[in-house]
Image (cartoon, rainbow, N blue to C red; front, side):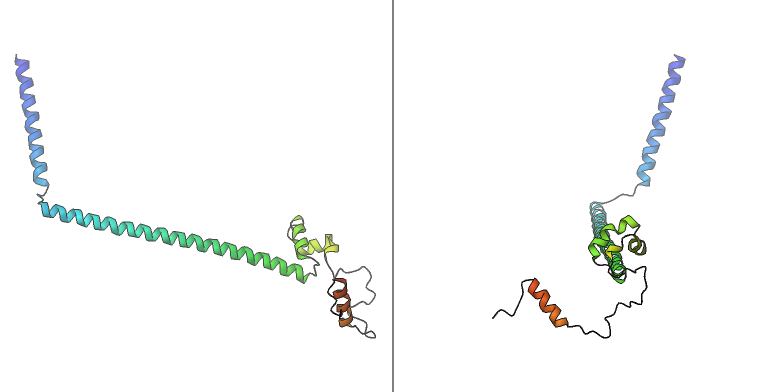
Length: 162
């Protein structure tokens, strides 16, 4: 029974310690009235609403930033495409679309394309220099009106049909 008595005292000490902890926790927590609690809840709800508004604004800004990044990428791609077209035109290409189709096979190098695919270019240098300047002979005259009439006739747009 002596052992039994010892077990009861241990249980009493444990219960007393537990009661003391409950009392101490109750003393540490401030007593809140119903209006204080409602005020705290309202403040919390306002803070949540403000944070949600910030999240919505940040999401909108992220969407706007992503749209702007897309526009920038599109403009950069268009600029690169225009730069390639301009280089091809300066090189004297006959057909930009055809040249662009095979430009990738030559590493994007216009000079290499011109060397390996001379048929794409109008001003292909010949192996003979022969004094050709590419300009019309000084002794001949050109009649652009006559040439235009010929092309209009070939196209079926002959406007001399009265």
